[in-house]
Image 1 (cartoon, rainbow, N blue to C red):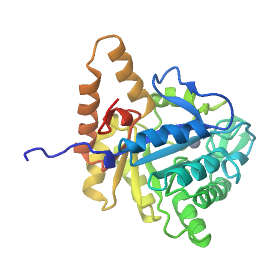
Image 2 (image 1 turned 90 degrees about the horizontal axis):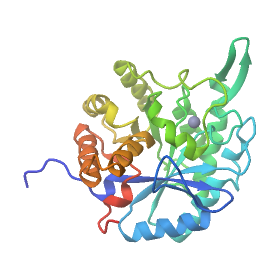
Image 3 (image 1 turned 180 degrees about the vertical axis):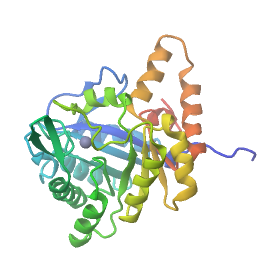
Length: 307
Ligand SMILES: [Zn+2]
């Protein structure tokens, strides 16, 4: 009765990696996390759903990449195929899809690349149309919610307009609204094979030093029609979450990223931390700061009939 916060399955979203070809593969820097072939992904999702899993977030690993990222919006792309299979098998499981181009482009950037004298730059506006096309293809495959993670300016509005005119006015957008450039994403890039070949993402991701700018970015996404706003990474950004909670009426999500997961796993394996307690305390801190929902690789451990 006295507790202010707790963790329940409806607070948790499990991020999962789905691959177009090949056998299941454990991700070396994220022990216990895998790249799943579609059929096995559905079976794992079924096991977790039976134990209470309410929603998952899908990241795709295509068979081939190109310069534009065409696999991102292909009708039979890996995310589209997996979404259809999941929704057919488990209609009550909420499927959120990651909308970005970096897993699908050879260069590994989140948008259309342009070579300049001093290196490369990502072209914001031409990227918007491709992201919108990707989001519509996910909705058509049955995605319950789309989550643009690219951080291009104006993409929430572009995706909203595209969804509305394709007949998906009811499909909500979870915007990665405050996404900081951080080394905490390192293990994910191995998992999703999405490290940029050249340059980095500091041109379109947030500077870790800037809190007010993060709130401004969230404001823009909110005004463009985001139904839910995300802060990423989670634990290094509790101040942003708390400030956002006071400022925005929509639900907030926080992404406990791969590096946060790897840190706890590594310390637990070395016998330096008590994993289960640290995971709970960390997630409760993220809830206390203001997150309505948390994307966490620890989700399976927190379901009612835990591992
Ligand atoms: Zn990206």
